[in-house]
Length: 273
Picture 1 (cartoon, rainbow, N blue to C red):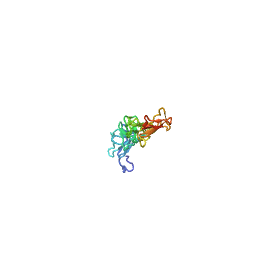
Picture 2: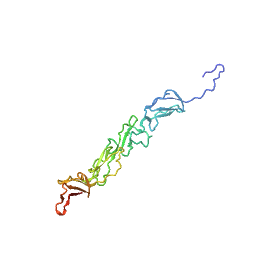
Picture 3: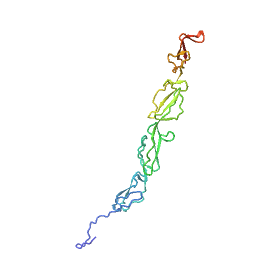
Picture 4: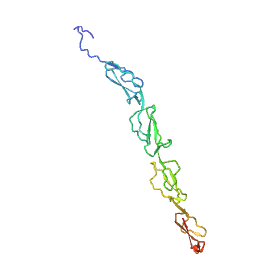
């Protein structure tokens, strides 16, 4: 302040002294502030961003540390605490269900479990019949990607009455077919007539078609006619239900069937199932 020559009196109205802080260099794991080295007025709050794109202030889910220029001391606090890398919950990959909590951040090396969205789907290549897959939070701040596919499978059903239980694995792939055989070798389903079993194909949704199983019924395969007989009704190689009759005729219509006079009948031989 200069003493004026004319009045010999120093001027008044000097203005108020204000506390200021120098914007400091950023601590480790934080980016420099654009005002570094400049002065800011006491009470001013400065935000320092974590250097890592997925860095968060320790103990928080904040990606910037707020520090205030002290209004009376002109100091900015130190010892901010390092930024730590965390992973945000990822969207589920195709075939998986979303997490119930999609907001919590997770530490590096922690894991999340994702379940296949279809009740009949199983993690491809996983041991057993796993329906869940664990993904880890990596040091990059991202959860691992490229999850194995959830693949639909059909659970092999319990055999219905008259059929043997299948000894194949308890689950089969989509479009695969499984056949249940009749318990009796001479029982047939009639689909086709000489079929001794019933086949089911696993559908795309991991379920078998809803259908009624045909009954395994005991049947007889009609034999080819013996010498001296003809088969005008085409019985040979046909299947007959129990108690059904296949009829054959003598080649010569003057011949009788039977080995005694009392049981001889004209021209016809009947075979009962």
